[in-house]
Amino acid sequence: MPARNATDVAAQNGAKQVKALLFDVFGTVVDWRGGISREAAAFGARNGIDRDWLAFADDWRGLYQPAMEQVRAGNRGFVRLDVLHRENLDQLFGKYGITGISEEETDHLNRAWHRLRPWEDVLPGLHRLHRQYVLGTLSNGNIALMVNMARNSGLPWDAVLGAEVTRSYKPMPETYLGSCEALGLRPDQCMLVAAHNGDLQAARDCGMKTAYINRPYEYGPHQKVDFEATSDWEFIANDMVELADQIGCP
Amino acid sequence: MPARNATDVAAQNGAKQVKALLFDVFGTVVDWRGGISREAAAFGARNGIDRDWLAFADDWRGLYQPAMEQVRAGNRGFVRLDVLHRENLDQLFGKYGITGISEEETDHLNRAWHRLRPWEDVLPGLHRLHRQYVLGTLSNGNIALMVNMARNSGLPWDAVLGAEVTRSYKPMPETYLGSCEALGLRPDQCMLVAAHNGDLQAARDCGMKTAYINRPYEYGPHQKVDFEATSDWEFIANDMVELADQIGCP
Image (cartoon, rainbow over all chains, first blue to last red; front, side):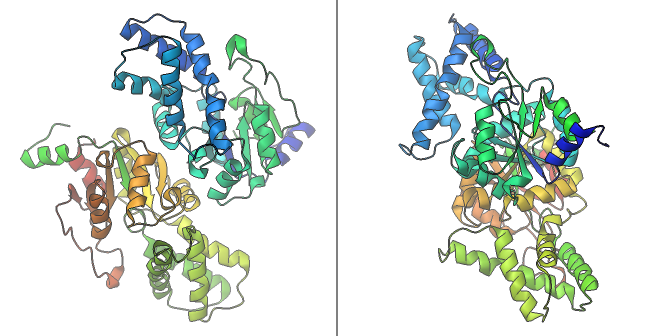
């Protein structure tokens, strides 16, 4: 698609040597708050438990960074996100006074993260981007989580990279650098697509190109940051379809 | 698809708890001998070099096991297959008296492994199997090699596993066990699909299910083993379409 004006030319130059688009997933690709709260509510209904399931989802997500920080700080060896999610879920059951749940039911709820659904722009956008670029995940989610999610929703990943492949959690540099290296590409041949300015800054610090997707609704009423791009990322788009337009993927 | 007779019932029971089919790739999925010899011949034509390129392909493949053995024996740390292929190629250039080749041209030839094509039954068979099973690679090839090959030929992998993810080379148990674990599955929920009896035995020893695909033409006139199944693998098929028939994937 020919560039239509100077801005487009500049934007397309930003992607010129890029071979792979690597995606943050939770919040950028899938709606974790809607998905987890709905699954938790269904879990509650099955077990006759009435709680504020949106708050439950927020609390579960709230334990995510502190749990990974133990690994990043070197206080424990690398463990998969499924394990951290489960530890956090057990903790939340205590906080919410939920007892007597079977192992099978608990494991099923823990795997709600494997069943999260993409925002509605994602599949149309990714299918366009996929014609021209290698698409991969650069997420803190583990391989099984990403693979099951992709099969469940038809996400067209060529590669599942990120935390488990590099045995490190973002925003540590090795997560970004190791993911590019696994594709046999230099960091400047890879672009991180994310809804979080901090994630993009860490990727840029590693030499990657960057694309910001605006998801100001990710945290619902509790969103505190990432209402807009706070730096001059190579691309800044409202959704994946707009990103495909900007990059010039018909 | 309903089982048609006692043999089918037994075969389908073999796959009953299987969730993922994991594939050996070189020889089982793609024709390395045809692909490498054709690319080497094209390389020769471009550079005005006349050699026996089928022998060159056989020799290149012949250096594969000894190179990995250095890693398996612990004489060197894990290195990706792209690196081993390149070291072996440099060695072959010496043996064949090939000199004065640019880095770009050498790297392009080394990446011929990324461009190998599947046997003609593979895409039709895999697309049927993909409807019911998670499909992944359990190959000694590295991630970039597998990802580029898949994009090039449309191989529908959900996950690229094997050597680089587990940082070990088949037939070490950790390559099989680590690949199943990355999918969050027990070994008996995963089935290795391979044209090599030795590979299947190592997978069975780890508790995986097994499916043999007959490729008695893989090594051309130099084939010495794997003319037929030498054990009672759960499935024994002439190609991937027959495997889909036997498993009951319409």
